[in-house]
Each structure stands twice: as structure tokens, then as C-alpha cells.
Image 1 (cartoon, rainbow, N blue to C red):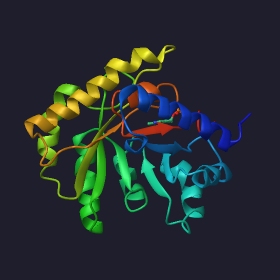
Image 2: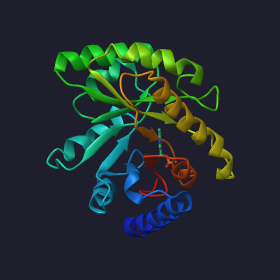
Image 3: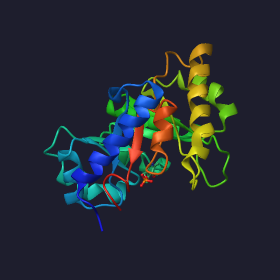
Image 4: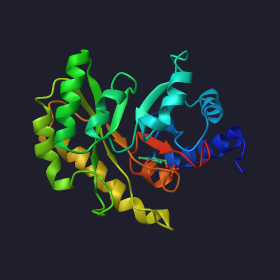
Length: 230
Ligand SMILES: *Cc1c(COP(=O)(O)O)cnc(C)c1O
């Protein structure tokens, strides 16, 4: 059973506020993506109306109906958060504002080529596999610097942040090292000037572990089940 979205949002907001307070951060530094991949168009609209115009989807096929139905709503901002196959780039560009899952050079090449053709620049997060789990997508941390350096040549890609997914843990506290590592990777890349400009954002934290991610510096958290339901 889904709780009312308002109720879920109130609780999420309370928990974000406490996590911000514990870590000396301001609520405005933390952006929430309502991950709607599990839910209907109606529920997606409820989330938007509740104050979450940033919507996240994993697959174009699943997002299509909602995306098309919401074209009359210019306030809605679509984030592509799932693994992006090279042959799906054409579906995503121009529809999603930001790609959170740039995880390999072949994808960068395709994004660059297709974005260039459309005359747009696509904001991207570079996805890292910090935990090293076999099942997770993302660059190994050691590959980041050279990847960023290569990306400076892609003028249709704008790297705005780093993204990671932590392993699912019964005790979310155990995810802390993963989030801390992503923050340190960003800070180190910036200190060394690995990319042409400072990288600002950290997309990290999901329903199970977002408070830890906020404490460790997340600027975008991606909330599905705990906010919009499943
Ligand atoms: C599904 C998904 C989420 C949201 O998951 P919840 O645990 O339901 O909050 C966040 N990020 C990515 C990349 C996802 O695929």
C-alpha cells in the first residue's frame, strides 16, 4: 500500500533536514529526484505537485508514456539515472535534461556525436563503481582522472558531477565509506584540475541510505520507494 505522497514527503523532508543539521549543511544544497520508475503517471503527477519537479527514470521504454503525457508541463525536469545503452542515446537526448550514468568511453563518444548533431550540450554525471561490486556499473576510481581528461575534448558534454550507487546494507551506516570516497574523488579531481572546470555535484543516496549520503555531501539524492512508493 502506498502512503499518501504528502505524508511520505513530510517524513523525507524531516529526515533530510536532520541529516543537514547533523552535518552543518543547508537544505537548499540538497536536490531531490523523485524516481518514478516503479509508479504510474498519476503518482508521478502527485510527486510533481508535492514539490518534486525533478523526475528520474531508468529506461526510456518505461518513461515514454509519462514523458509524453507531461509535455505540457515545462516545470518538469527529467533525469536519466539508469544504465544507458549506446543505441538508446537517441531516445534520451533532448528529452532528459541530465544523464547521471556516464560510465564508459563508448557512451561518451555516442553522446558527444548525437548531442553535437542536435546542437545541444548535455550535462552528465560520471558514474563510479566505488564499492567494486561486480554487479555495478561505473568506472573504477583509478580510471576517473584520465576519463575526465579525455572528456575535456567533448564539447557537447558538460560534466557537472559524479554519481555512485552504494551496496544495499541492512545498516545504512555501512554505506558511509562509499559516499565519502565519492566526495573525496570529486575534491581530488578538482584539486588536480583533472577536468577543465570544477566539478560541483554528487549524485548519491537512495531510499535506504540517503541520510548518510546527505551527511557526506550529496547534492542530488534519488528517491524512489520511500518517496513515491513502488
Ligand atoms: C531505482 C533507482 C533509484 C531509487 O531507488 P529507491 O531505493 O527506490 O529509492 C535511485 N537511483 C537509481 C540509479 C535507481 O536505479
